[in-house]
Each structure stands twice: as C-alpha cells, then as structure tokens.
Image 1 (cartoon, protein in one colour):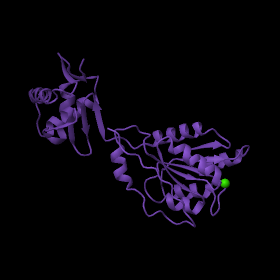
Image 2 (cartoon, rainbow, N blue to C red):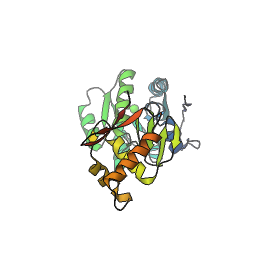
Image 3 (cartoon, protein in one colour):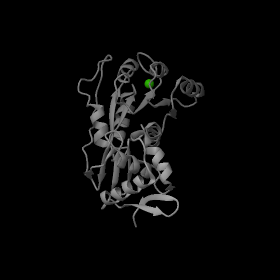
Image 4 (tube, helix red, strand yellow):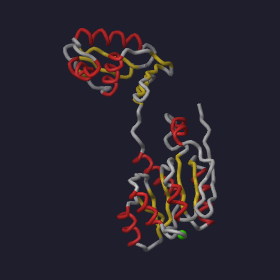
Length: 260
Ligand code: CA
C-alpha cells in the first residue's frame, strides 16, 4: 500500500503563521511502517529566494514535506509548532539570525535537529553554531545530494523509538497492546502477551522459563514453569501463519525465530 505524501510550500510574511498545517500526529501514524524518509517534515529557513526555491524543489523530489520561511522570527515561530523533524537553517537572516533561532530553540528544551548552512571559510560560524546547539552544518555552495543525505542522517539519529516490534508476519504494538499475525489482529491474554513480548524482544536468543516468569510477574502473582509451557503452546497455535516459530530448547528454554 502506498500512502499519499503531502508537499506544501508556505510563504510566510512578517512572521505570520500557516493556518493549514496538517496534523503532525496523524501524519506520523500514516507514515509509520513505511520508508522512514517518506514525508519527512523539513523546515527550510533561507532568505535567498533563488537558493530557497531550488532547495525546496530538490527536497520535495525526495518525498520530503517542506515548509519554507525566509526570516529568523518566522523560523522561531514555526519551530514552536510541533511537527518539524529536521530544520535547515541559514545563518544570515532578516529579523534574528540563525544562531539566535537555535539558541531560542534549545532554551525551550526542544531537541529538533538543526543543520546550519554556513558560508565558506567561516570557521568561527561553524564552531559557534555547534556550540549554540546545532547538530551539523553544510558549507555553501553544496551539492543537494549531500544536503539530502545529511537531513536523513539527522532524522534517523533523532527518530523517536518505535513502539512496535515485529518479526516476519508477527507485529506487536506496545502502545496499543495490539498483536497482529499477517496483518490480522489476534487475541492474547495479558500473560500470553507478556510471554510473547519477552520472546520477541529476545528473538534469536534462547531464554529460560525462569527469565520469562520474571518478565511477566508484574502482571500476575505466582507463575509456575508448567504455566509458561501452557502459554507457549497456546501462543504457538495463535502464531500459526505468522512465519514465526517458538522452538523448545530442551533443558534451556525457548527460542523465538523466523520459521524456515
Ligand atoms: Ca542568508
């Protein structure tokens, strides 16, 4: 399945805010599970109209969702809205400069990754930018391919930890406590969920029944090793068609792995 990717260009004047920002939370859900770069939301802050336009188009061809602003105050306001995954920031800007934009961003405690665009030979700018809290910089002029690669690298480094764990056709969403086999929801008891989550977290490694018991104890009172065997045999039935197998390793415990 392919999801629509939204591209937009918002021209902001005098720090005016966009009124039609897509809900970032929904978008994140839509793109989850797809290529991580799809729809990556980039704030591009560049006051050189020609350069900004070229960069905007280059990033959009890479399936990035780009908001472009041309002055420091507009950038500062845009960064106070949720949704920006990577900010690309020129230093010399009308209003407040790029350093001040980064300083304010970090003063608010925001971790949004920032890539600074700096002038050639401006070593002190790069040092100052990194000290202020920028994550990376690129010296003008640069190849757009390098800009794209650096934006993606920053996004990867700052990606929020996924709430889903998956192997073959098995998928557990720990936020919603939903388990799916080949895309179809399956019903699991609290303890079955605990056993399966633990096995999946340790996929490819042998875990003992005692380790499983300790992992699921928060949900139950006394759990015997026999009970673990019962949960595992029920799980095996429920995992039918998932491409995942729970193997018994005699004398040691269990090993969850992708089936041959
Ligand atoms: Ca500039």
